[in-house]
Image (cartoon, rainbow, N blue to C red):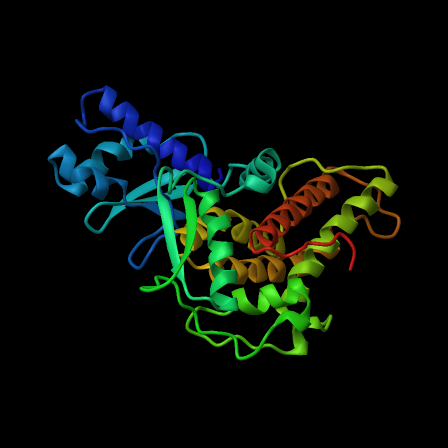
Length: 326
């Protein structure tokens, strides 16, 4: 079960509780699920009970206890625990084919994986100074806000609402992609480093790792086609695969955070995390030696292709090209 599917499941539980008269509230448009915080447990947690408590006229913990039995036992959910003032902590069923479900979700949504309506109807006005980094950050924020259903508008003049630390020099000599990465990857309070290191194709360069991981994913698809097989979502075992799946599952949360906090650097760093999780996994995808393509190879390829989709989509939002060959 993916975070998107879990969010829909929790929302359905709320709707059922309202229909049964157990809660007297307006059903929200969406439910946010995130990794558990301190004191939490399980795979995901949601604060929906805290959000509904006041309009329901009941304590948050009581709202959580109403929702709990409507979640326990559903397909894909192994256990639900209420912690703190009313957080619902959800453990996914280990029998659930979470990898295949996630890969299918990414294949279905393509470049729109992680898009949501978190900012639906909102207009985000960004007032920035006439400065290269501020302009680049604002442009990226507009694109990222659009993935969450909002609309960004860029204005100039005082008082500014977005003022990252300016670049020490003109990044244009690095070329459009490296220059964009140099301006967007650091946190807003950090000064960008405009150096030729961003052009070097080696592991120390995070931009290279992201683009290389994407190119490797595309190359695997081409090589698999030559071997006569294609991708088919399925169960993929191994620690490397689990680490990669976790980063891909976190992509929707990262996009929402980058949009709401006006922080494209969060997306840039997340892409590095995805690439770093992908690179140890990718050598396991194709058959080796005398091996014949099997269902396991098709499932591994599907996960690799999903990874390439997330990397390409993320780079596009940052205004950076994702070449199929490096």
